[in-house]
Image 1 (cartoon, rainbow, N blue to C red):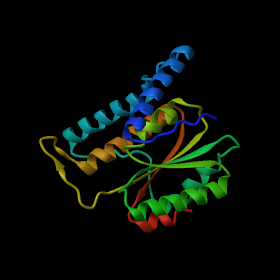
Image 2: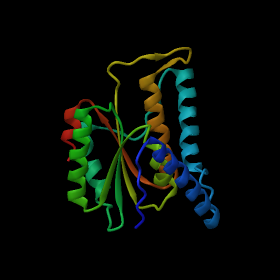
Image 3: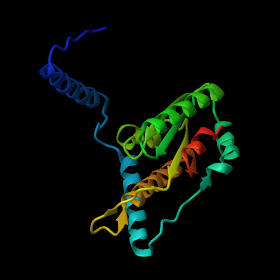
Length: 201
């Protein structure tokens, strides 16, 4: 183990620089392009297509969306695919607040206990920048639970012909379709309230 003391903010900045260089060198030696993320780009292109469709038709063509009250069997069937080397990813396109964080954590723990697999939970679309490429381009061992909701306090994006809530739903849909195109096992669940998340298992 190497210990690198950080005594001030400048040291922290220096460590960012050090590890960026280290990663670049390691990727060069391994023949990997650290900046290549084709599967994340696929998700973005699918999202753009959904946005264009919405701007032309005024609606999103939701795919494979299960209402939370009917989701227990769908979730059970997905988790039945868990193997020793599997992991479960909860991709939550929901408001990020204390109550939602707590409910997702409880669901994550319950799924871990049920499957004995590693379980991650991320808020969309932000998780796509850190794990999106792994989800779609990494080993095909993930089981994906996408959770979406209808925005209660929604705002129009000026000059774009859609709201922020619609944009987030388009991002969720684009990511889901990219997962399916990559041969991943994934489900989509629509929440009507926080209680729906608490009662999924």
